[in-house]
Amino acid sequence: MSLYAADGRVKLRRAQSLFMLTLCSLAALVGIFVLGLVLFFLAQRGLGHLNLKLFTVASGDGDGFAQSLRGTLQILAVACAVAVPLGIMGGIYQQESKGTFANTVRFLTDVLNGIPSIVIGIFVYAALVLPISQAFPGKGYSGWAGGVALAIMMLPLIMRTTEEMLRLVPSALSEASLGLGATRWRTMVSVVLPAARGGILTGILLAVARVAGETAPLIFTILGNEFMGKMDGQMDALPLRLFKYATDVDETHHQIAWAAALVLILMVLCLSIIARLSTRNRMQEDK
Image 1 (cartoon, one colour):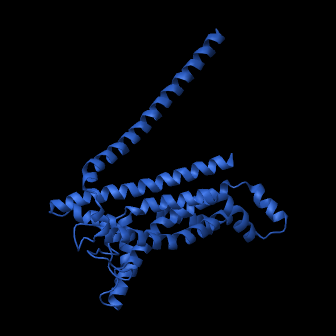
Image 2 (tube, helix red, strand yellow):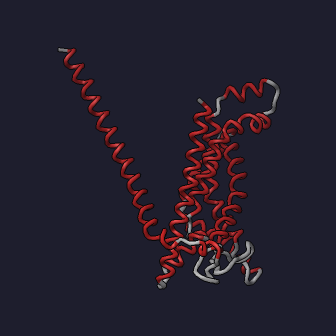
Image 3 (cartoon, rainbow, N blue to C red):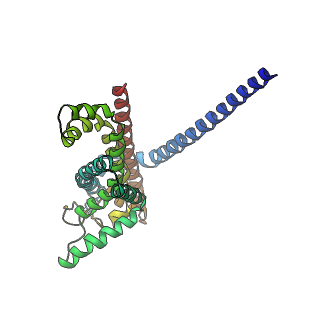
């Protein structure tokens, strides 16, 4: 009797496992289907309007978004220049330091990661754009301010990713380095960080992918520009141009907006794929 009962429990567990596996597979398929549907919809609406002119002509000189694409790349470069070193150093501090202050920094990092982007945009506007515009009339809105806003959004993700990747490095590596007489700082720079560089790079790419499509912070910091702008003045970005064209009454602008949306999502998708491939290569190297 006990054998039959044990066999029944085994079958029940197998049935439960099969049910949960099927449920998770269906959930994954739903996510893939939604992404595929979005890509198909954007390709159907925007692919026919893609042409070389869009990438070479500014919207003020014709129907294009060259200044928006260049502005996006410049602002992302500024954001990376600010967020990457600060995020890596902050992640190192969170990993190496213990105590109340370190836990407080970790908690505030998680809070910052959940703040809506529009709130960050308003903060940068009040703290940076408005004072500069009052001190220097005609100034204030700039690519630098937009880069700072996006850097604030990138910072918590890079910090947490760096901390987690450093935590995954085997302690035997750092112990061996310390045993050979190296300082903790030299051990971190020469041993631990190189071992975690693949995961840290993945976190940076994911952070860039996250902020690449943000519009709200840029409305309050760069304002927009129909022509090629400079970093110290009003600039344009692809998400902002997409928003303005999508809300315009001109049907031609609507068509360009679909093309811009397709370009933007392809940029984000490429960054995500590169991050995924980087993670896979790192896992294969670890094996």
